Amino acid sequence: AQRPLLPAGSGVLNAGATDILQEIAETFCIPVGTTFSAKGALPEEHPLSVGTIDPSGPQHAYQAARECDVLIAVGARFHDFNTLAWCLYQIPGSTRLIHFDIDPNELCRNSPADVALIADARLGLEALHHKLKEMSLKPDSFGEWKAQIDDWRRRWLDEIKDKGKEKDGQLSNIRILREAGE
Image 1 (cartoon, helix red, strand yellow):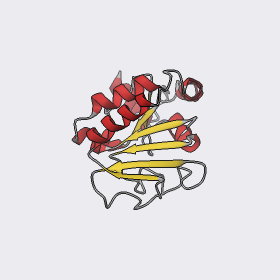
Image 2 (tube, rainbow, N blue to C red; image 1 turned 120 degrees about the vertical axis):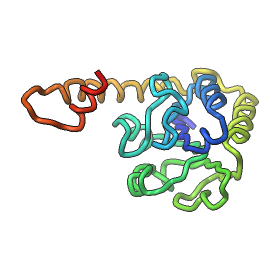
Image 3 (cartoon, rainbow, N blue to C red; image 1 turned 120 degrees about the horizontal axis):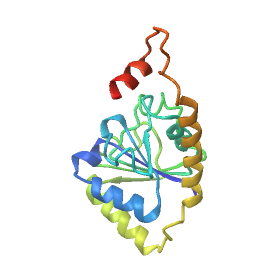
C-alpha cells in the first residue's frame, strides 16, 4: 500500500474499538474515514480523520476514497448510501479491499474483497495492529499520502469558507447550520 484508507463503520463503535482504531491511525499514519453511523469513531478534528465518507462528508474524503490503493474496511457495510450508489470506490480496479465484519453476510456482498475476514471490530483491529507492528512500518510510511489529503482538505475549506455567510435574506442549509453552530 502507498495510499491506504481505513473506513470505520458502526461495528467499531459497537465493539468499543475506537481506542485501537486511533492507535493504528497514529502509529502508522493511516487516514481514517467513517460512515455516517460511525461518526466520532475517530474525532473529526483529529489530523488523520478525513470525516465521513458518504454524501454527508467533505470533498477531500471523497477524493481520498477514490484515490486510495488499499481500503481497510472495519465494521462497515458497503451499501448504496456510503458508496454513492457503488460509484465511489475503485473496487475492483485500482483499489484493493480488505474487509472485516462480524456479520459474514456483509463480506463481499456489494464489493469483492481481496481479503475478507469474519471478525469483531476490536479483535480484528488488534490483530491488524499486531501484524503491522511485525512488518516494522515506519511511522511516516504514508506521510506523502496524508500530505496529499491535507492539501485537498485545505482547498475544500478555502472553497467553502464563505458559504452560508450571505445576509441577503436567502436561507440555505449551510447558512442555517453555520448560524446555529455559531
